[in-house]
Figure 1: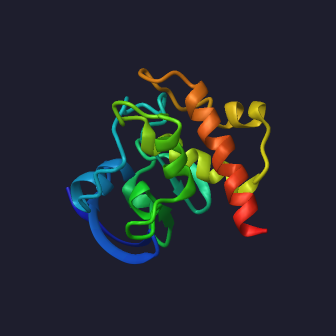
Figure 2: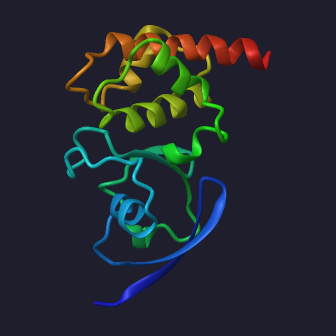
Length: 160
C-alpha cells in the first residue's frame, strides 16, 4: 500500500508527514507524529476522547482520515498551553478537580475551547449541550461543567 505525503498546520507549525490511506488522524498524531495527548477511547466516534480542532471545528480524530488533512489546520491538546503557562481551561480543570484518569480530558478541553471561541459567555445548558458528545467514566460531569463556566468567566474578564 502506498503512502500519501501530507502538509498540514498542527498547533501553529507546518508539518509534513506520510500516512497510509486507511490511517486516521488520531493514528497519525499518535503513531507518526508522536503526539500522544489525543486519546483513543472507543475508535468509533462515540466517546469524544480523541476530539481535536480541525479547521476551526471540533472533530473526532478517530473518524477523519489522515489523507484528508492536506492544508488542514489542526489544534491538539499539545498546542493548548503556552510553554509552562496553562490555558485557563486547563487551569480550571485542575482547580475544580474535573479530571481523574485523564483519558477523556484532552477531548473535553478541546471541545470546551471550541465552544468558548464561538460563545465566550455560555449558559450551563449550552456548556452541557456542547460537551454532550464527550463521555467521562470517572468524574461525572458537574465538575467539568463548573470548570468550563469558571474558565469562560476568567477569559472574559482578562480579555475585556
